[in-house]
Length: 158
Image (cartoon, rainbow, N blue to C red; front, side, top):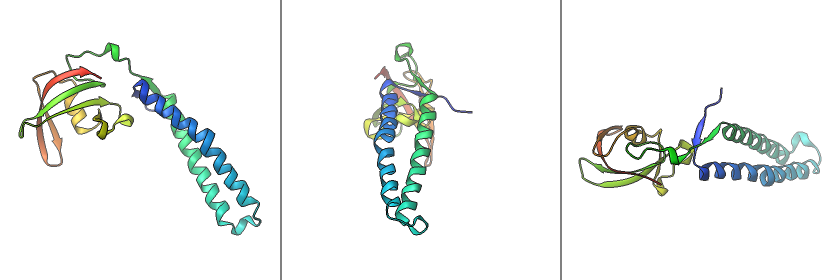
């Protein structure tokens, strides 16, 4: 049974582009390596041939996995998102209760998380702790260093 994953339009396009690149660029390149190694003669002691066949197997496995992910992907309709509570695709400004430091993150699907772009997964400890919270509510988030408290200051859409 496959797991349904939710993506933004941008995130799903990125996955489809990656799959296209694997099929149209990487797959023919590996086939060429196999053909070149095969032309060198005895396959029983040909390390280049073995390495190319192994690379081909790994690539085919990645392609299969990505095709499965895309087949089970669902687009998120951000027009339906309620800004009164934190949900996936919400941009949330939070304040650490202990040091008063403010941060802003956008909650996204697991595969779209990118900390540099301030996109955190709804599956992360902070993401899970913030889901369903309203402005003014405190989220108790379990971290390796203990429970941290974050106040939700503002909720908006991307």
